[in-house]
Length: 212
Image 1 (cartoon, rainbow, N blue to C red):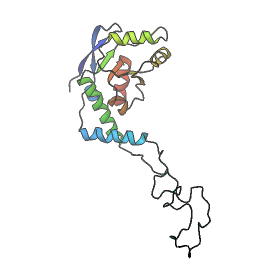
Image 2 (cartoon, helix red, strand yellow):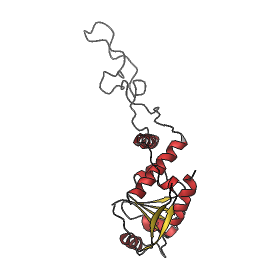
Image 3 (cartoon, rainbow, N blue to C red):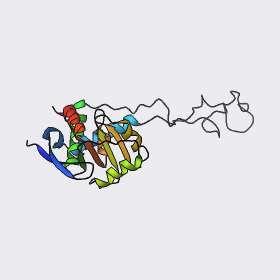
Image 4 (cartoon, helix red, strand yellow):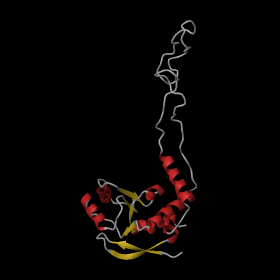
């Protein structure tokens, strides 16, 4: 496979050179069902077990018998906590013991991640810059840089090898902007990235991480 020549911009939004992208990382395709499987795995592993109802043994009710077994003409009743009574326990309700965790082979996750990166390159949604630096932590300075770059999507994900403190602080108040580290960015981060703004050092880090 041939290396991909991709434009590199400076912080003024000017194209200054071309970078050679590793095709085994940035020109990969996979079956759509694989990306579906990986997406479901990530979402399931994120899921928290919140829904919980009390059973008849957990509700705070008296243990005495509501009325005697015979002679009243009413239906038999053993406890106030019966599920058929108002305020009683819930029969077959959700419990907090459910486990939504899923596992997938690491190779499948890596392949899907490389496929998402490749789609971003193919659709020109990845913008490569030489280096992102700001002299002081000012949100308006970062916004000015972003406005000069060819970023078309409303959502932007910045990927850096090691984000500086000034960048971290400057990006906090910008809506629809995520800042990620190239060393631990995952499939779901890339799949929901919008526009991917990445510097050359982060490209090298991703290539080293995913190159076979």
